[in-house]
Length: 139
Image (cartoon, rainbow, N blue to C red; front, side, top):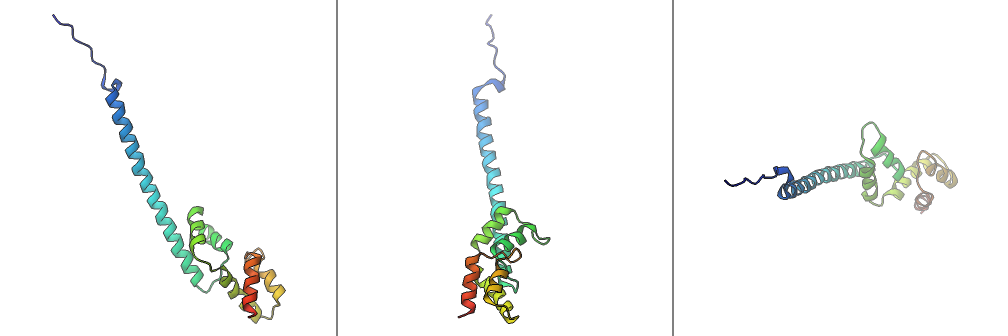
């Protein structure tokens, strides 16, 4: 009579764990691709919104646009998507500041008053952007 060799349960065999590892890696790659795709969609949407906003009559600095895209009631993009949009909307900041400067000049404000207004906590343009806008205004 032959002795039967006791076989290991399937979960103790090497081939089983190799298969588990392959499936786990494949599954995580698929999940990463889905997450990446959603992030890319959000960035594209945020950029489109940012472009629409800077083309509108409202004037935004980089900081105010970033705030609007992340904190306003109508837009709640992630900080990453909003930052992407602000960085890729184009070099529009001096022209945005110029729009405000023109309004303020029509109200009779001096260059110093306009500079102060453009760099205050509400408008939040950089001093360089504000000075370039005032320079363009005076051309």
